[in-house]
Image (cartoon, rainbow, N blue to C red):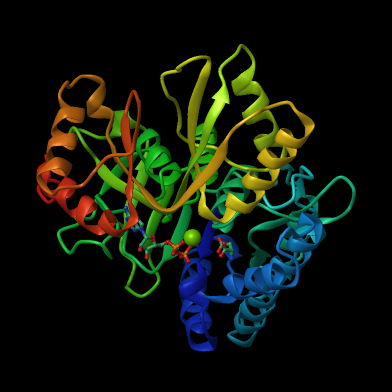
Length: 412
Ligand code: ADP
Ligand code: ASP
Ligand code: MG
C-alpha cells in the first residue's frame, strides 16, 4: 500500500468536533487506498498552558521535567483520534513516541531525531491496521527519558515519518489554506503561494513564520519529501494548499518571496567590556552553555580598550542570559560595567532566492522603513534574506510597509 502522512495542528484538533472533522479527512485517504500515518498536535492552547505551569512552578526549570509535562498534550489527542477513527470503522491505533520508539538526542526541549524504526508500526499495518496515529513533538532519549523537539515540533515529526516510511506526500493540515507572502493575520493583502522553494521556506520559518517548524523544512529538503500545507477546514482538491518543493519546479517568482517577523525578541547590550582577543568567546560560550539562542550580534567600535557588545535573543531567555553573564563576571572571565536588556524588540525579515541576482533589495527595505519613521537597531543579511531589529510596537506596520514596497500582493 502507498503511505501518506497527514499532520493536524492544534486548531485542527481543538475539540472533539474538529477531531471528527480531521478523522473524516483521514478516512477519505484510507478509502483512496492509502496506509495513513497521522501526526497530531496537542489541542490548541494546551501546550501553552502546560508551559505556563512549568514556568510558574520553576522559572529555571529542569528541562527533563519540562519535556515530561509539555509532551502530554499530544498523548491525549493521539488517543482521541484513534478512538474517533475506530468509531467510524477505520482500524486505527495510537502511538506515543517511546512506543514507536522515536529515538532522539537527549537535548531536552530541542531534541533531534536519531532513528525512527519502522518495525512496530509496519507489523500493525500488516495485521490490518489502516491508520497509525502518532503523538507529534516527542520522542525518547538514549537515557530512556521523554524528549520534545521544540515548539511547533509536530511538523518535524510529520516530515521525519514521511521520510522514514517513504510516504508519497506529507500533508500539513492547519488553520490557513497555505503558505502566504506574509502572515495573513498581519495584512489582508497577503497572497497565497501555489509553490515555494525549500530554501525560501526554510528562511521564512527560521525567521519566524511559524506555519512550519524550521527543522521540518530542513528535513523535507534533505530527504526530498513532497510537503503540502493546506486547510483543515476546506474540502481538499489536487491543487489545494501550497507545495514546498525544489526551486527547479518553480517557473516564475518575485525577487522577494515573503516577509517574516519574530515578535518576542530582546536586545541585550553589555556596556563597556574589555576589548581583547577571546572576549567574544568568553561572552558567547557561557551564553550557549546556558541554552541562550543568540541570533544577531554587533560589536561596537572600541574606545580606550573597551567596547559595547550587543546581541539579540528570544525574550524568554533574558533571565538565563543575565544569569550567565553575571556568573562569568563573578568568575572574572569577563568584565563589563552594565548589562542592559531591551525586552521590546521584534525582528522583521525579507526573504527571496531572487536576491542572489538582484541588487538594491536592502536599500529598498531601509527606505520603506524610514518612510514610516521606524528606527532600525540591528541589521543582518545573508544570501537570500535581510533582517532588521526594530521596536515591537512598529512590527505590524513594518510588515505591511515592506509587503507594499515589494508589491507582494502581485504574482510575478
Ligand atoms: P498549527 O497549530 O496547525 O501547527 P500554527 O499556528 O503553528 O498552526 O501555524 C499556522 C499559523 O502560521 C497561521 O495561522 C498564520 O497565522 C501563521 N503564519 C505565519 N506566517 C505565515 C505565512 N507566511 N503563511 C501562512 N501562515 C503564516
Ligand atoms: N504542541 C506543540 C506546540 O504547540 C507542538 C506542535 O503543535 O507542533 O508547540
Ligand atoms: Mg505549528
